[in-house]
Amino acid sequence: MTSIPSIDQLLPHDEPMILIDRALEVEQDSIHCQVEISGKNPFFNTQTNTLPAYVGIEFMAQSVAAWSGYHALTRGAQPSIGFLLGSRRYNTYCDEFEQGQMLDIYAEKMMEDNGMAVFTARIEHHGETVASCQLNVYVPTEKKLQEMKIRSQS
Figure 1 (tube, rainbow, N blue to C red):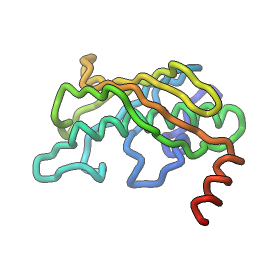
Figure 2: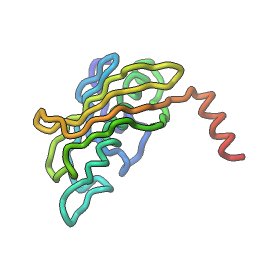
Figure 3: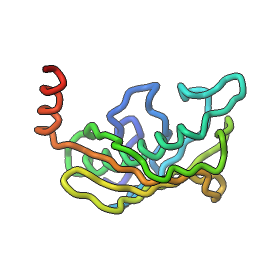
Figure 4: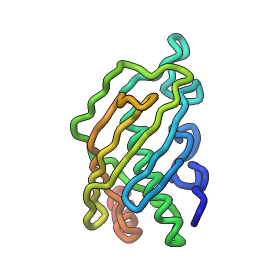
């Protein structure tokens, strides 16, 4: 696969919960995505034309999901549901993102084992880091996902 599909093809999400705009570069263990801060985001404050900086953690999580979705598509599979288990050391160097800001999101896989993975991630604006964290994620196999669905219905 030489070109990168649109973000809605990479994420198992529906609008309006697709919060990032595009994947620019995908490597074996990393991804670079972008988002322009705008009123289309459901967390956007129309009174101040800003977005709380804590939404940045979801930008990073969706970038990891886009990385996973891209690699699934290259194997001929559909992007699967994954879970953000938690984050460590979420640091933000601003209180909010402003309308019109173009943010670059970078994520890199540090380790992966049996569907569990750890990524480091950061958000940059004009080359300056404005947020960073470590994300712990889990992508279950289809069999495990079906088992989870059955248990939740009991």
